[in-house]
Image (cartoon, rainbow, N blue to C red; front, side, top):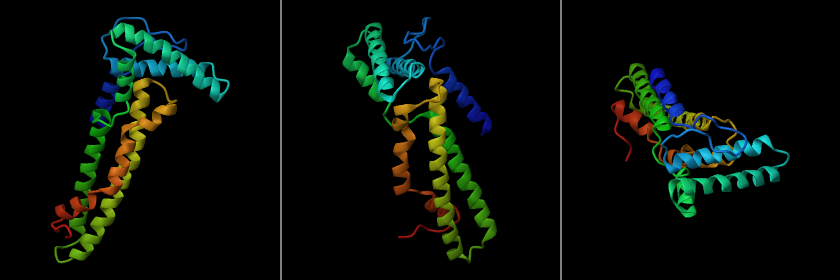
Length: 206
């Protein structure tokens, strides 16, 4: 699993912002074929660095960032031959909670490995004539795994995004990290107890 995570981190680094990032609100030199969405992410990061380097108040930071974004988005509109509306639409795609392999694959692997490991431990600890003990343990263990995955998901999602943009200052971008939307779904429909029960040989409750 460690090698898989390392490989995904290298892939994230390779698909992140281009070389030549700066604090001057200037697009990095050097040609590199990139999608509009990737370029919008880069423009956001350039604007963030530009504002951070000149920060003296929260209001000034927001104004400087907006001014730089407007300049860079206009540049992207011309470079990609699209309208300002299409650039805005590309920016909205960054907030969509789609499947993100560098974020979700390691969490899926951890989720399944944790369930299989705890199931084996429960089956070794209890016999088949102790269904109540197995059921209670399965519920608590399953909920515990679900909570751990939620916490790790938040940390991992933020780590991946910071690696992508090459900056630990996420600002407003924290609010659109994809895994945060999955937290509510995970709390409402945590399937860990059900999976653990089934793997231990017990039926789900009606």
